[in-house]
Length: 208
Picture: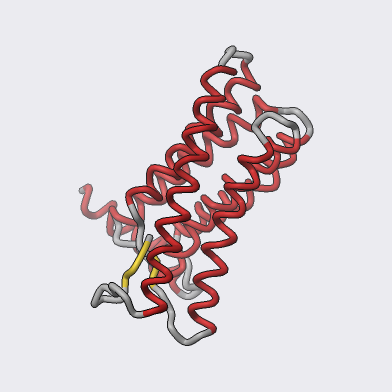
């Protein structure tokens, strides 16, 4: 019975949406992208509690679309690009908004945004020079993303519910800054090795 239900769900959302080259997990991810300006607006206008709740909902949607993609074999090339893009847009917009309201240090916002811009520029340059690099996650990158998410959720919860977490926020900011610098260094080091032909992995997957 469960198998029949799974097949019916696949037919409903898998086959019918394949015409548009999009499926249910992709729609959920697009919803997360659409939530970005709303979260940003809520933070800029001081509605931290509502922003925190929307941020939590976005996190839940991230888990749901990942589960559906794996459970029903709905992984797509679009989803592979769209999912990390949605996460990055959300976290960067939150950091910019929190920085604008002086709820996290401005130098940390600059560091986080500059890191992403530098990595994107490096990848684009490799393609322009006809020496494309395939992105592969590093442990330091995963730790950096975790630190960014923990800091963002802590600040949002503290601002929304007045939890008195200022000392913890400062320590988290320091940890996030250190991991941001470490991950940028690791990526740029691997990128230079890729571009110069030093230490290239055979499958072409150099970093992140």
